[in-house]
Amino acid sequence: MLRATNIDSLSRGTFDVLVLGGGINGAVAAAALAGRGAKVALIDRGDFAGFTSQESSNLAWGGIKYMESLEFRLVRKLCRSRNRLLRSYPSSVQEIRFYAAHERGFRHGLFKLFLGTWLYWIIGSFFTKLPRLLSRRTIAREEPIINVDGCDGGFEYSDAYLVDNDARFVWGFVRAALDRGALAANYVESLGARREGGAWVARARDVLSGRELSIRARVIVNACGPFADAHNALTGQRTRHRHIFSKGIHLIVDRLTSSRRVLTFFADDGRPFFVIPMGNRTCIGTTDTPVEVPETHVTPEDRRFVLSNINKRLNLPRPLTEADVIAERCGVRPLAVQDGSGTDDWMLLSRKHAVEVDREQAHVSIFGGKLTDCLNVGEEICEVVQALGVALPRPAARWYGEPGEDERRAFFEEARQLGLDARTQPRSSEALSARLWRRYGAQALGLLEEIRRDPRMADPLIDGAEDLRCEVAYAARHEMITKLEDFLRRRTKIALLVRRDELSTSPGLREACRILFGEAAEPKLEEYFQEHGARQPAEGKAPLTAQPLR
Image: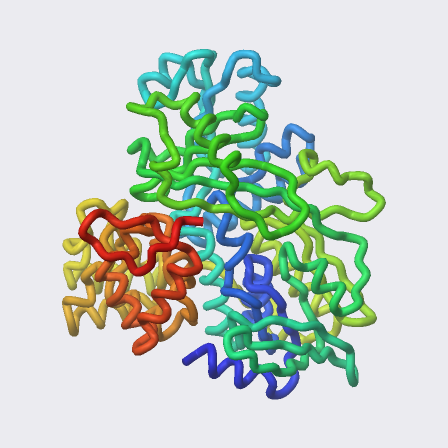
C-alpha cells in the first residue's frame, strides 16, 4: 500500500522540508515545494483535509464582506487569488452568482450595498459578470422561493465556488505533491521535534499501529491549522501570532431550488447567510460563534438558528425541521491574531494568513488563511524556504492547475468514442465525462480503459451517489484510504449526500468496502458506524449498528 511504503521511507535520509498538517495550507506548501524540486515529507495526525479544510462553505470568494471594514488591499489580494483559481482550475472552481435579498431596516441601505458590489467588481479586475440591481418583483419572478415580505429589493453579483467538495480539492494538492516525488502519509502524528546536527529531528507515531519513527529535515513548516499553537509549544517555538477560533456550521438538506445560484441573506445576527447548491442537495449556513478550543460539534442551538433563519426567509411548502437534515458540517475558523495588537474581537477579524519564520532554527509557522488564498500560501512558503537555504532546482515551475488542453481534448475524445456520457445517471447534476475529468484529470484516461475492458466498472455502487465502481477501485490503489470515512467524507462527498440510515443498509457500500479494504471490509464498516452512528433504518431493513446519530 502507498501509505505503508511512504511511512517506511520517512525515516530514511534527510528531507529538505517536513510539512506538518495536511489541510489546505500544508497541502499547497507540499505541492509547491515538491513542484519546485525540493525533497518534501508531509504528515498529518488524521486524514488529509480531515479537520477545518473539510468544513468550509465550498466557496472561493474574494472577501466582499471585508469591504465593510475597509480592508481593500485584502479584498484585492483575495479577488486576484480567486481569479487565478478560476483560470487554473476551470473544471473545479467556477463562477457562480450570489443572489442577495435586502431587508428593510438593515444597517446598510440597498443602494449602498449595490454600489459596493460594483466596487467589488472593479477591485476584482472586471473578471466576472456585472452586478445587477434587483427589484422585489424581479426576485419574486426569478426566485419565487425567496420570501420578499419585508424586503425592498436586492442585488446579484459573482464570486466562485467548488463544484466538488473542499476536501477533494485539498487532496488534489496532496496528489500533486506525491506525483512530484514528495512522501506523504496520513494518520502519522508529530510528537514534537528538536534541532540536532543542523537539522530537525521530528518524533512521529503511526496513529493506527502505534509504531514510532524519526524524520529528519532541514526545515519544518508548521501547517497544523487550529493546532499550530499547540505544536509550536511542543517544539519550543515562541511566536508573535496565535489563533482564536470561530465555529461555523452548515446543514445539508434536499435541494430547495433548481437554480444554480447562491441565495444570500443576512441572518438575525447580521452576518451573511447562504443557501448553496450542492448537486442534488442544498447546503445552508453558516454560523459564526466564538469558541475556546478547535474541537467543536453542532449543538441544538446551532440547528435551531440555521433552521429558524432559513424558514423565515424562504417560501417553503412546509418549514424545514431537523428530520430534513441529511448531514451536518461543523468546523472552526482559525483566526490569526498578533500578541499586543488588541484585535481579539473575532467579529472584526478577517481570514488573512500570516507566515512567521524563525530563521535561526529554520522553522516556519502558518497562521490563519482560507481556501481562496491557497496559491499565495504555496508561493510564499517557497520564497521563505528558499531564503532559509533550501535550493529549489525548478524555481519557475508551475506547480498548480489542471492538465493542459491537449490532455483534456484526448480524454474527452476517448470518452466520446466510448459513449461515456450515455451512462450518466438521470438525476446527475453534470455529464459523467465532466465529473471524471474534474476529479482525476489526466488519470481519468486510465478509468476509461477500465470501463472499456469491463463495462460494469461504469456502474454506480451506492444509491444516491454518483461514484462508479472504477472510481472506488482507483481510490483503493491511489488515494491512501485508511478509514471508511476518508472515502465517504473526503475523497468523495457521499456522507454529505446520503443519509446514514440509508448508508447503513446499502449493499453498494458493502461492495465498496470490499474493494477498498478486502478482508477488513466488515470491521471497517462497523468502525465507521460505531464512531458516527446511524439512524434507525426503515422497517424490514437490518442496520449495521443501532447507534444513535451524534
